[in-house]
Image (cartoon, rainbow, N blue to C red; front, side, top):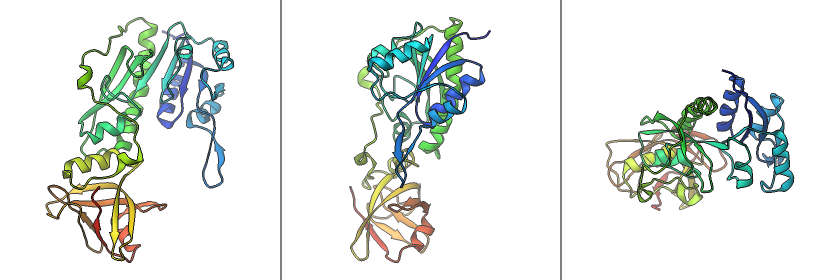
Length: 318
């Protein structure tokens, strides 16, 4: 059955492009896209469009880029598109005047199994916390962020070697499939929304925004927890530690990959060979296999060590 709804899509990053593409592949009519204003980036500080805007323009979809989501002129532009339903994937918090506008409401694709991991960084925190499963959820928007009635969910496995980038890609694909399934179910009236009340509020796992302070590694923690944190922050924004060179200068580096070893090294101390770097934790030492020096490309540890004459003698324990 053809879906004769007019859809407005709200999103910004690559994660959202997959969902937008899935709608078009199913011949679902997207009458407009709402995305962030162009931003200056790169050394030349040139304006660059979001991935969603670039995709929309390639497919001749009208694009709105409001700076103020409550602005009357933006609301009028939305109304002029006459959406039957709106879809939000990786966008901003919306005012009620926006999410309550279409007759069939606004639905969101969230990268976790709600109600767990509400917030800005569900992919990162699922791995940081050592989860073995994650998933995607479609739900109806309401006043409080990420709390609306659940429509559908897909579960996704997290392997022991998955980092945040790997999980991002899995959930991006799964979320696109789930969005189409949700639109079809709502259109055919085969979905019964369910409230997010099956887990007590005091037992919920949160996914707050990742700040710089969040990224520092604590080498007095266990090797398992440190590996999970490295995985959960890789490839971006990257777990951070400080290394002290033999000239007593301290450098801050991103640790992007680490593996457990059977070596025993005092926590926060480093041991180096010509091609390997080990750092002690509360239990066993970790081998750092991928890292990034400030303003440099990420590189394997062997390449990293060849590029510097000073030995790294010890880390600072945060």
